[in-house]
Image (cartoon, rainbow, N blue to C red):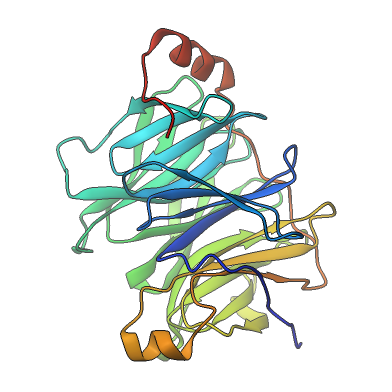
Length: 308
């Protein structure tokens, strides 16, 4: 099927990532990892408000109308959007100063899953963690190289996960009640000449939309059959992630990166932008982090960082 990728935010981000449709704010929230910015964007008008956090930021999730939970180089933090005030939660890798958080997403029960990686992309230096609503952190998958896309099946019994250099989309049995995972198995292997699987999002039919870094496309994967059933050809070579949004959740927003060699960068004037595609299927609403009350308590008792 032919899809048109429309540039809606010409942000020229160095490493755009982690799109999240914030329904109550009617905004697309996403990050520039290398630019150290959170973006609050209106895809219809092109308006793009930036919050600078002065360090690598891998992911954001909503915890209500005015709170975001962040995955930073310095660990997990909460950001009060109204006050532009940030408070540290926990750094599970305080002993690894050259690691940073990368992609993250909330599971159906409102736990935040987010993974890490080494700045120099060293093999096996990262891990996948789970931040629970009581603000405790749990190591879930060790020895990860570049932790990336996450999502859960429609029946909440399977978690899908990507460690990009493996080129594999892996499924785990998932227990919604406890947050436990087990029995990893590969449901798809991206061919060596097709790029690397990066961020992903599930649609209402249970298919995964996966951005292919250095592959210039987003694929739609049926994980039950392990087959590509649709694709979006992109005008940029490094699409990084995607998320459904818009009032009807029928728009797929795709982030990208401009961290390219000069010759390639000149050939891709839209690199680092955010694109919109209407793929003919709807997505699911993003799940908020379930620990809002604990976050508000933390904000009250902690001095935090002033306006970002």
